[in-house]
Image 1 (cartoon, rainbow, N blue to C red):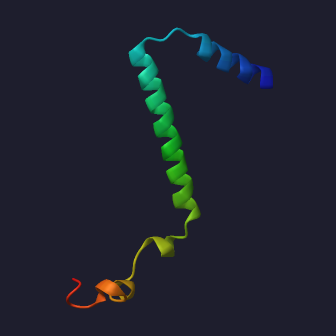
Image 2 (image 1 turned 45 degrees about the vertical axis):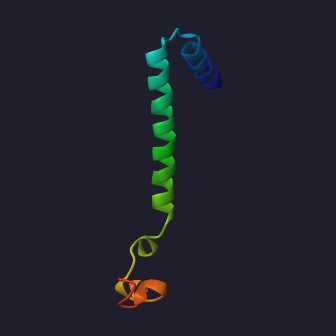
Length: 68
């Protein structure tokens, strides 16, 4: 099984690419990493911490009428 993955990776690395294909592949890889990371962070964060309540908006520096 492990050799199969190595063979697939070697095939991908040996494949000739032009500049457009290279940039596309790198962009998709970065987008995939950022997307997966964001998804994991959103799933790990409890939902009650994501939304801000009205009470938390009225406290602190911007809580007064002047800060609105």
